[in-house]
Image 1 (cartoon, rainbow, N blue to C red):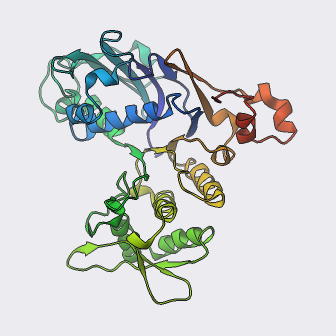
Image 2 (cartoon, one colour; image 1 turned 90 degrees about the vertical axis):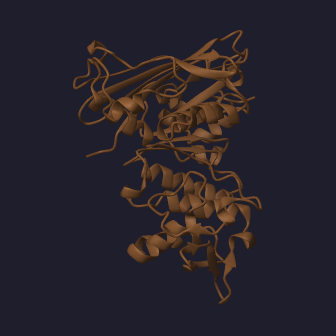
Image 3 (cartoon, one colour; image 1 turned 90 degrees about the horizontal axis):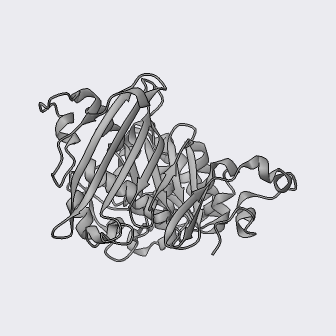
Length: 376
């Protein structure tokens, strides 16, 4: 059975996303645009969803991000509420989930609307909405999904939607500082999936060494394609903990994460993520500027891996790299522009750029030449 996917999302009132719609989402979606155009805001929206539905920590997310006023387009005096509606597709049918958050004292959100529905047909707009209680600071659909009684609500539908949205993970491997999670000893049992910050990479690699040595060798082979000095990972358990270590070619000495370049650490995490077995992957992966700090050859490799994985998983990538964009078709690209403080979206139609494509222009080149927009 193919994994669930996001078919569309409409967001109103979140930061620069005053009113945007991503529709007919494919398995690979690449977000491009100038600095400040709203790419990271789209990614942060899905990160907010994860905090909201995976761990019931919406209030904590909002606090860490500067408060509710900072999340609203132009502040709460301009935009007193944020709204969103998502359509999620499975083999069984179509699931809708919507919510609205209103600004409340002291600089927090409360739910003023939360509803969901399911239809086994394509005519999902005819299905009746099932409404969750409102007025609370956290999502009520989680309680409904756990089977708590509520008049007129189907717990199964709530449970499916919560599970689907919990299956969306935002990955960002930017933090390679001295206090980075990459450089900490990690619990060897924390290995069922790669965490979004990559901190448990050593535990995941240790698991592969025990259970799937061929996959570990595939990961190592792909790393060697762009990091010729790399030989193999050397992950040893000590008192239930593991740390990231690897061996360069031509020496018996191993190097820890603290002696590894920032780009190499990010490469290790990305190549591992994009080559994990299906049971260790979420349904939807969102990658925030995965090219950061990578050599051009590594960027091209990561792009090819994303394209390959997108056959089986839905992936959304926010990037500033023309090299990464070149790995995708023009129809998989969404261009973001900022106009009067508001993000706008458009998808280039490859038929309109047929002349350029026939002349051998790659999507990244067309972006650089401002043929498809997205430039400062």
